[in-house]
Length: 200
Image (cartoon, rainbow, N blue to C red):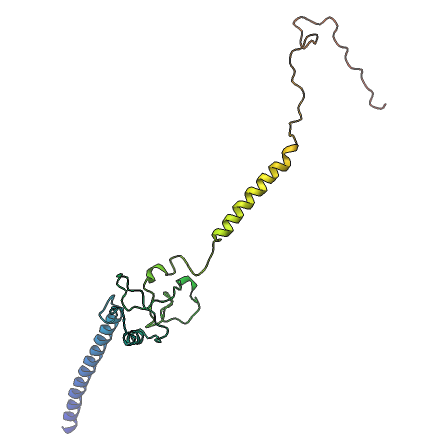
């Protein structure tokens, strides 16, 4: 009888333990989801840029906030556009980043916690790559245009002494004393050509 009651007690304890473990698991999942949604939300008070730093201490605090060295930190100018203390980062287009890098987010070529450019929407992989110049400069275009005109007009000037014509026969116009056709039968028809032998 004692073994039966012991088994019953163990069963009750294990059920409580299972419930407690389920609750802990659910609590962990809820915390993880809350953290996930806090991390992927669009604009939280923690990420919102602070006011423009005016003193060296504020600049150092802003650099620490964004994970930069104070000598590398440079905010956008305070021109009223609302960038605040957000760092002015160099523009690196998405197409210019290493496609084989070990990124935390390979589709965006970004790492977790990486500071993004303020105009990141303009520099994705589906936008133009401003780090790679695939078109000639204005000076190169002007040089090609000028050279084309010089060569074209030079050939025209060199070729001006040569006259081109079509090799045709003179026009068969009416002339006096020349019979072009007869309106009545000819009395002296031309004789047929002599037959030639095949052998000589």
